Image 1 (tube, rainbow, N blue to C red):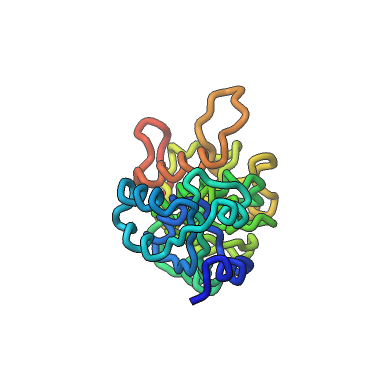
Image 2: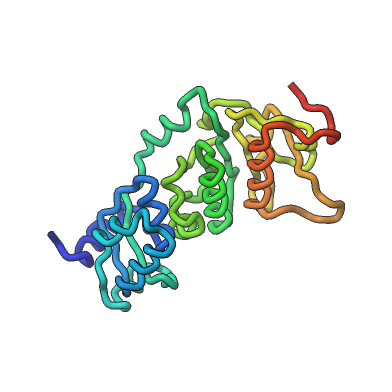
Length: 255
């Protein structure tokens, strides 16, 4: 078997960087194929696994190879406090599209329309994984598998489906778009097969996606507050969906 440094350099261009212990932990929990994993302190990484993730401790023990700290830092854009990094095989586009298109669907798909902030996109993927959403779709130029997005998502890309599509390629289901001019979300019951679209942090929804939406919804917000963070908006919307019904006394639900 080749040494980990050679394997890393051979695979780095075609795989997903798992930056830090938590990203590797989550990727393993959700079935990622991880051909190489390194750490600058193997004993510390395994001790962390014993404390926080005993379910993947044995898998980590079989994967992690200790390398000099300088070697580790050469593999990552910014060293992680846990000094752990790995490479994982990205799910094929074909398998992702099949999962997004599969019906009937029992959980929503989140759409980020032309997102700009890599960290916010990662936080949304982490939220979607936590709520069990079917997937997160991005439109525009951002790569949702960019290393900064994967780091922000703590490796939970492998716990949901993450893909970049055009507005015309969105998966089936009723499209609800978040917009300040929309109906108060508290009066609307979101169906399980909803497609939930959120505009970019600065410019909001694109005209194309806004025109395609069957429903415009707004989040409650105090006057003179400009906006919510993107991940906060997604969290509020997914929580509302998870409750299964609109709040009583906050408006009549629509069919």
